Image (cartoon, rainbow, N blue to C red; front, top):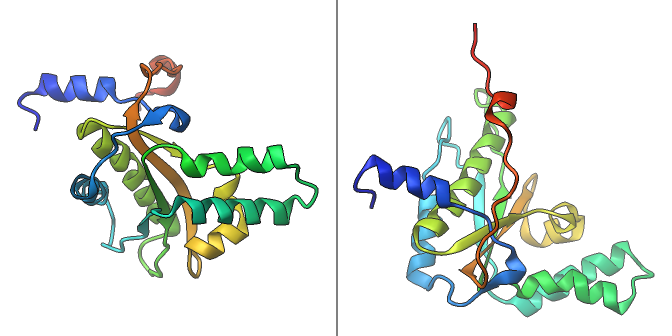
Length: 189
């Protein structure tokens, strides 16, 4: 818990994404993971539509086989080295969670607002992992857009919003380039 405003500022200033390949054990145990996932869903959601789902990927070998099958279907001339590189992310980090955008029919709430809500779940997921002492990373890439992977993990009009890797950092996290605030902040009028 944050005891004062300084703690919140320090927390926000220290959150970084880690590289999934550099995440090691320990990851969250089942109880902690459940808490992280529940915190992730405490997000703005106009209309209380819950336009998202979370999928904990437990069987990494089966997920790797899904990645391989999808990649080979799209790349019939794939070499083994390419396939090995494609399935490697299935085994990175102790914990892997897929975030699914699950749009809901609504006469009042446009899809755009639902998409922002799923994005907020993603950011909350990273914050919750960090608040529990873990490092997280939100990865999209080809697998989020592959129809075979979507068919395995999604239903109806759902789409993959990303894969979240959670674990402990094997190395110090690097600061990434950030925008100059004067380039992105405007005051109106």
